[in-house]
Amino acid sequence: MDTKEKVKIEVPIYSELHAAGNAPEYLFWVGSAGAFDDRYTKVTRDFVKILHHLGVSYGVLGVEESDSGDTARRAGNEMLFQMQAMMNIEVMNAYEVKKIITCDPHDFNTLKNEYPDYDGHYEVWHHSQFLEKMIKEGKLKLTKKALAGKKITYHDPCYLGRGNGEYEAPRNILDALADDRVEMKRSKSFALCCGAGGAQMFKEAEKGNKEVNMERMEDVSETKCDIVVTGCPFCMTMLTDGIKFTEQEEQMKNMDLAELVALELKL
Image (tube, rainbow, N blue to C red; front, side, top):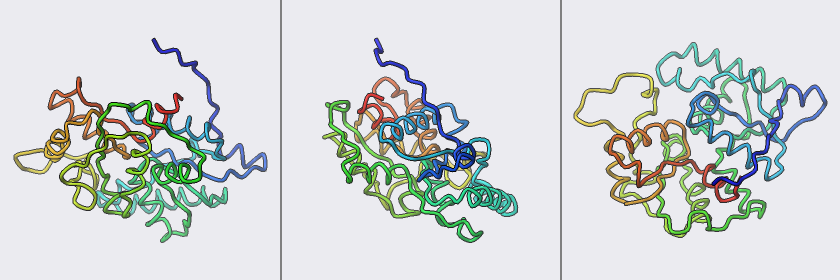
C-alpha cells in the first residue's frame, strides 16, 4: 500500500514572480514532451518535487513557453525554427532569464548552442548536470536504499552525449544511487542512438530490416538489467516501446534519472 502523503505543490510562474518584483535564479524549461507526453509528465512532476525538496529558486514560463523549435530545425523547417526561437528569446529576455534547467537534451542543445545566434544567451543545465552539482555541493544526499539489489544500465542520449560531451554527470548520479551499474557494449561516444533523434519521432521509419530501437534493445537486454535509465523524453519513448515489443515488461523498467532520485528521496 502506498502510504506516501500526497502534497500539492504550487509551481511558481515567471510572469507572476516578475510582477511581484521577484527574480528566480533558474527558469525550469519544461519542454513540449515534459508538458504533453503522458509518460514524461511524470518525470516533470518528479523533477519539480526535487526542486522543492532542495529549496531551489525557480519559475516556469507556463503558457508563455513555446516549443524550442528543435524538431522544426532537424526536419528542415528553418523558418519555423527561427520564429519559435525568436519568440521564446523575446519572452526570456523580457524576464531577464540568466539560468535555465531542462530535462530534455534536445531543448538543452538548442537553448545552449543555437539560441545565442538570435541574442538568446543563457547558462543552460541539463537536469543530470544540475543534480550532479547538487550532490557535489552536499545539498542532495542520496543513499542506495531504493535501488538495493537492482542492476541498472544507462543509455546515452545523443544530444547530451555526442552532441555536448556530457557522459559523466548521469553516471555519477547513478553511482550515488546504486552499487550495480553496468555499461552496455556500446556506450558513451560509441552509444547507439535510440532512433528518435533528428525529428525521426514524427516520420515513417527508413527502409531496412530492423528498427533502430530494436537494435539498441539488444544492447540493453545483454546487460540483463532491471532498469534501463535515460535522461531524454525521446529515448524514454523508444526504449519503452522496445521493452514492450520484446515482452520484457515484467522484468525490466525504463526510468528517468529524476524518477530514480525522487524514488530514493521518497518524494
